[in-house]
Length: 270
Image 1 (cartoon, one colour):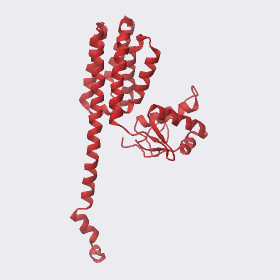
Image 2 (tube, one colour):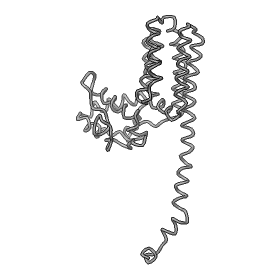
Image 3 (tube, one colour):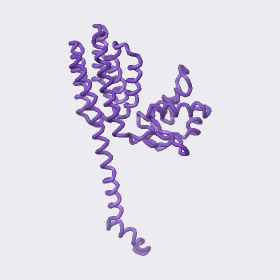
Image 4 (cartoon, one colour):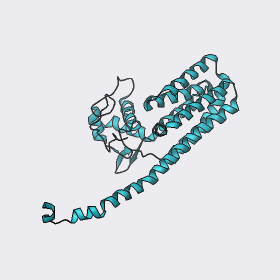
């Protein structure tokens, strides 16, 4: 997160996609507002735009060479998805990371994905199970955080696809998207990815056995555990921030610093 900026436009990024660090607009396969929202979401997920950074409408419009209308629509979309917040007289900014939101997202996912998995298991075929197995293997091999998030989502969604519940799947996709920033935090725990991959294997084994109750219990525990891990991490980080500020303040007010500040001009030149 060290390359994150506190505002828009971005400066000094080393990414290959554009000088500003944002992905350039792709070929017009969808609306301009959707493409802008996708680009901003990518920057937020990857940490290029920091939590609480302002999202200035005029600067974004200049960056993408568009009018204010699609930018306004893009910001509203991001706000509805939880990526940004819009306040009266203050404008838009990147939503902060919230331990409570993280835990709630995974609690909801636990309930809905247990339901989806129970509906999907009777409809899985040999071909669909081969696809799920391949996606699990791809996620296990992946070391790049950006790609792992995508591999992880592909694995989970392929487990539930045979449920035949399009509205439920849309809800899960939205929850996965809202949880992307939090999921990336797991890479701060080297052992956790191995545990997560092992849990994926256990879930898949239960699905292959057609053991609905075991598979549902495993996927629920997997998601609740992730939510609690992220909750504890964000709690600890929030507690550490005041301590770090006190340390910096004490260092600035140390006797050595005071002596340095109180030296006379003659002493300073000696």
